[in-house]
Length: 459
Ligand code: BES
Ligand code: ZN
Image (tube, rainbow, N blue to C red; front, side, top):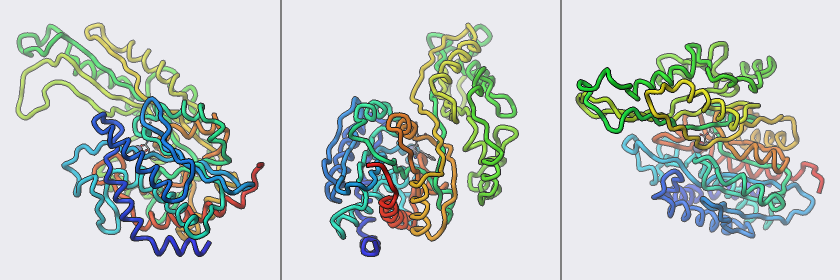
């Protein structure tokens, strides 16, 4: 093992240069004009998998972006880990708020800034380098590895469930390993045992066939911007509780024991608030901030568009108004059921004076696992060695839709060991990864594979 860690320490600077090349590819899955870049990125990942010594590397086509697959199965009797990550990234807008170009990775104060640095290219690359170190030093890995990298995670993983169902046999493994989440805090490594699900919608309202003079017609017709605002106002009450009938029916309440565990975590609410630049925190009444973000569902307006928004004033009644609205879900809520309930509610509260178009976008199921299994314990030991500190156990508010699919379709647990940070600016300008965490993450990944080798599994 020491020779592998030595190799990782010696090659630290090279890793940074290689990661910069991966981060230079603008693989933005949400924007059709970047489709060639997304494919180029898939090919780059496939080439890299071959370079580090994985075998059977190929792009598996889906109706959307390809899945990159590679494996190394030369450790008979040892466990098989299925590594999952994504090579697509979020759009970069508003690009003028970046301090350095999003696709020219730049180091400042020990952090590497680029779109995808943390979410998820940097964290995927960490594992590729851990694999490389074993292959170069020992010519083999301590465990069997199957690796899949998808190109549609940031747009809802629409084709991945079918991919998993269609390749059940090839994907057979003992444990899924994912690094696509932040750790609890700087210097506080963590293992995440729960993610929220998601249900995403667009609401379009049309009042008239065209924009109207607000003097000539104000008073005669409904204003879709105003109607939309009143509809949104009916979605939550003042205490932050969602008013969609039946919405809370399947919510698994936080247990007293879990709430007590959350309270033990080193969470500084004042610092949290200040770092967000929020005058005051706000959330569902009766819950702490961590409980709200990790263990309670929410409804958020992700975007609003209507009327005149340029400089100056324009007297107009807009013809249309649009809102993007999504809900984060917790166990045991189901995105399909929530979609039905939400659509019924929106149709009920929409007045007859506007024409409503309701569109369901992507979604994903929530996930939660027990962390009392030998794989999680192996990860805990590896993190303790790699970061010099025992990990804490956390849940997260974000979503990785495929995690519950792995549980349901392959019947195997996932270990989420992410090395991002809460201030990594994922999905925002100036996304970054801490280079110390990146390096320790490579070491911890390598130790994790070694620790996994000792976990007894049925062949
Ligand atoms: N890396 C995130 C998921 C994440 C975020 C996990 C924060 C833990 C904490 C992932 O890339 C992501 O952004 N997922 C999307 C999924 C959605 C499009 C279905 C999300 O959560 O918005
Ligand atoms: Zn993301």
